Image (cartoon, rainbow, N blue to C red):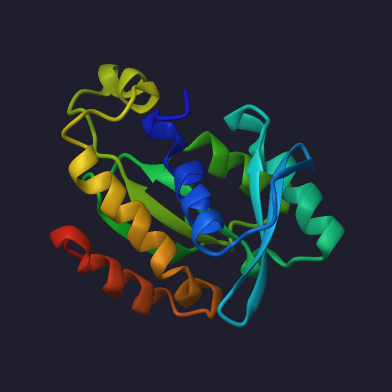
Length: 179
């Protein structure tokens, strides 16, 4: 399960935690949390341990406890509509059928949080989407996956400082991935 395409968001958060000396993970808010300092910002990392369809519950509990506004939340998630390895950052918008985002929208009462969309590509046929998303990364994917996760961790300070365009520009240079 850990290497499934659907878990690329968790993989990115783990890479950030490892690179920035996060505290040990502990069970809280229906998830696993760790704290870190990235650049000048103190951040809370959260990996919901609910079903994907209920992940907004964990986000809402943590954001309520720490009084974190939706605008200060960044969700890292898989994105079918982006080629493998491509990354886009945006604030708000629709959930494009992503059940985790749908749950966050519902529990935060707003879609106005940041999203780091991590491209996993589309299998080409709608009937193959579930198997693709729940499938493990292939050996060919390893050529871009490691460098992208390293790039996310290396440049996470730009996100923490509210510079999503700079973050995307830096990641566009990673492993020849185009912005």
